[in-house]
Length: 181
Image (cartoon, rainbow, N blue to C red):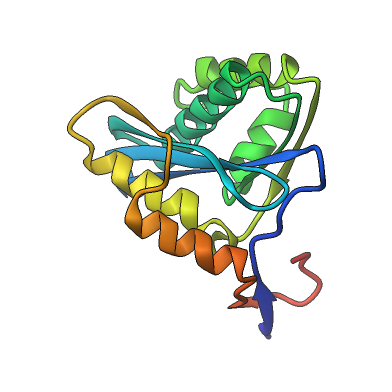
């Protein structure tokens, strides 16, 4: 039996930033894009990004989006980063030292290498309802005419989602009993 729970985006602690990343694949495989947003402890926008990736699988696009976000954190010299994504399989791939299927070894290795260069980093799962800004940027990435774009300020649709996050809007989610929210 499923229980109803409430989910929201939670800002990082003071002196930390939060990177939310997501991938969007229009089919599996299908036309794909990735994106994400970096916010400070007040929930304010630092940078956002989106990438057109082409045709690939949903796992590969999640890894591309994460790799781009990690690289942006490194370029910004961020030293304390909480990374949230809604793809548990990617978190498992990063924690597992075995070879990875479907030719994604290089993407996983790139992510691990970037993570090792951030002095303080935490990776955690979030439900998609708490990842709406990154999801919007990932969908934008799938439709980009160019390869990669950094956003100094949020696009209008993402700005609306940011304001909802800032207001602490709760989203309902049906979860299995015993699941961690």
